[in-house]
Length: 134
Image (cartoon, rainbow, N blue to C red; front, side):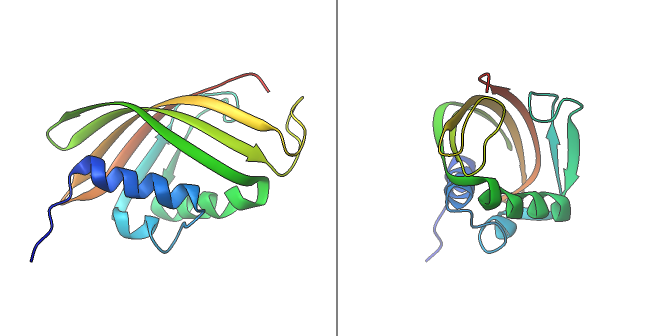
C-alpha cells in the first residue's frame, strides 16, 4: 500500500525532527543530495549565508549544544506546485546566555520560509528569520 504524503506533511516531519535535534537520522532523509539552505540577514547571522547539505547537517549538530529545547508552530501555509510558503513561530530555550538573555531563557522568532520540493524531498529553502531582541 502506497501512502501519499503532501509537501506540508513532509515539512512537518522535518520540523518535528528539528525539535528532537534529530539531524542526520530523519532530516537527512528528507533532503535531496544537492539541497541548499539560504538564510537572509538577521540578528544571529547579519551577513546571511547559504549552506549545502553537509554544512546544514553540521549546523544542526550545533543546536543541542546551545539549546535545551526548541519548538516550531506552523501559523500559515500557502502551497503552489512544488513550493510551500510557510510562516512559523519559533521558541528556543538557551543552554548558554546570549546577549541579555540568560541560560534557561527563551529566544523567540517569526520565520518565513520558502521551501521547494523535488520528487518529494526538500531541495531548496530560503529563510527570512525575524528574531525578537535578545
